[in-house]
Image (cartoon, rainbow, N blue to C red; front, side, top):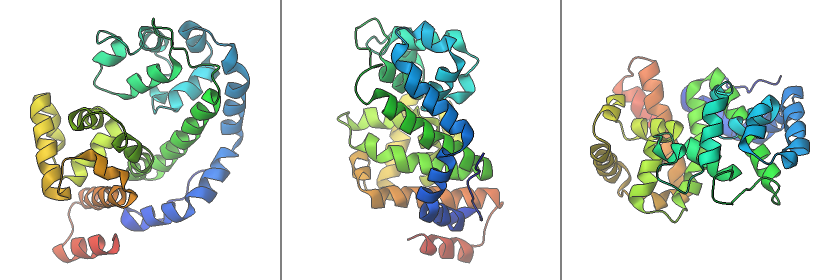
Length: 262
């Protein structure tokens, strides 16, 4: 199994990973395990008609969950079946009641809910899920080398798409707050403590938005359609993560590190 190469911590490691991403991802996707799982999914998923059939096939479920960063739920078959069967069209649906928005994305992507919106078998469905699975699997593997790299890669892939959505500014912030990797990125990029998660959700929203105005000049997340601003957020995250890992850095070191990131 190919393991991503991250030769250094902090921005040096991140810049190397960016420069070599396409070559490394291609090598990773050629790995026997990844090819075996994706080929099986491509060949078999069109035969699946219910959520129960999906969760009963561990190899299909591996790809389905891995595509949304939920691979740790591989043994929670009944829970995932409920997520899929209840869909996303009702506020009472299980995926809509969970703070982690990745379950909502999973359920919506497969469309097994009570409202007829099944996506399995539609043109491009298998290819889309496989592409997400490959990207997320590489991010997980990179995270095994350095946990910050997984968050940075995920944000680079997902943040611009979220920013371009039609949802309101508040809805986008709630999505970020409910998406563990994006939440982690913004907590550190905005220099917020993890303990912010213990306060009322509406208070959290105000804090995130106020700090975004201070750091980025606006709380309008549509600004992150700009890839340069995504990189700015990722850079702030990487630097503050490294500061935390190293137990603190001198003022001069922090300034030099930030300058090297822009």
